[in-house]
Length: 150
Image 1 (cartoon, rainbow, N blue to C red):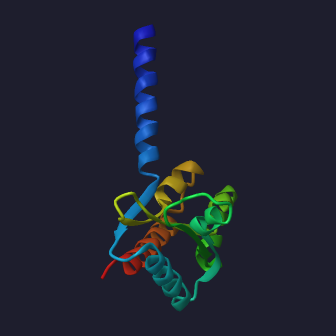
Image 2: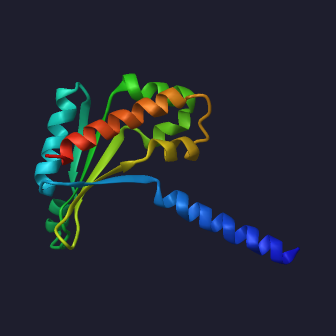
């Protein structure tokens, strides 16, 4: 019995790790970090979404004499998309507005990442709102592909 409990615990930990790995969707960009961020910001504005903030972590690090490769977070949203998600599960508001992260790695590759809406669904135990999750997934994917692709 103890062996079965240990095995079950290991499997649970492994499945939690796998879920955590899939909590972010990451796309490689064909542009510099700054250009990717600028493209993303321009695209969301052109689609009528609200750009709430751009946080340039590299610039902030520089201001205190610390080094950081390009790292920027863009916070954006649209109440027509976010509100239905909060109506499904009000605690999902902690994950809104939406965010994308643009980073440059040690190999000078640029990445755009965002929270997987399926992860948010599981995290907040959202039930009966698959259409909302699907719509958010499609919008995030379309915006991200447009910002990173040539």
